[in-house]
Image (cartoon, rainbow, N blue to C red; front, side):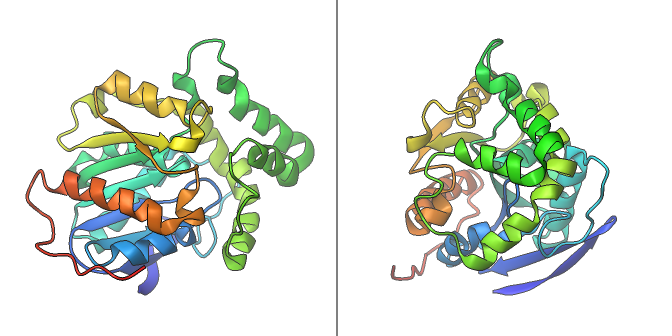
Length: 280
């Protein structure tokens, strides 16, 4: 693994690169960083050049601000990394808020995309009118105003299935807690307002796949993936496990990503001739 800091407009983005071959950019969700994907990145590095990073203002990256951050800034950061580290083209995987950023990137900067896998984007605005999930982001924003990041963070964690049933790496957990004010104070408005650009996504010149975990059926953060896939006419797939299965069981989650990423890259024939797999 090699790491560094990539300079973008107004920030330095900490990144990690593992392996070689077709590029796979992995975008973390709310409060997270490159550490979310350390396990699966190692597993997939025999076949792909896996790029993970700490998003602007999070963990080891700079650029923290008190002003609300628009999603186009997050997408521009991801595009800059693809240009600078992957030769201008990559398959993108995003989980949760990272999936929202991936959908934004696909709509605004299709020229850098080999494909998109959007895993459980909590795009609550696509849920039906009257669905209780539609008001959840606003509820958390109000909790943050009243009780700060601890109150909002506790409520957020209560709604994510499987959290508390396994241990996070201590260093990742510490960085995650340090990102909470940035999440709720700066990033939250962009995530709350997100609506996918259905016209742009329908006309994407690359494969787009939506998906969610088998154990997350029915949740407010899994159901939007089904609705977005229906609206833009793309495949929906079921992944193993929970929202953060890549932390709970990285080998199993990596196996699912490997198959899907290979299928998506095979549309252009740009896949490794032979994998030299590592024993698990």
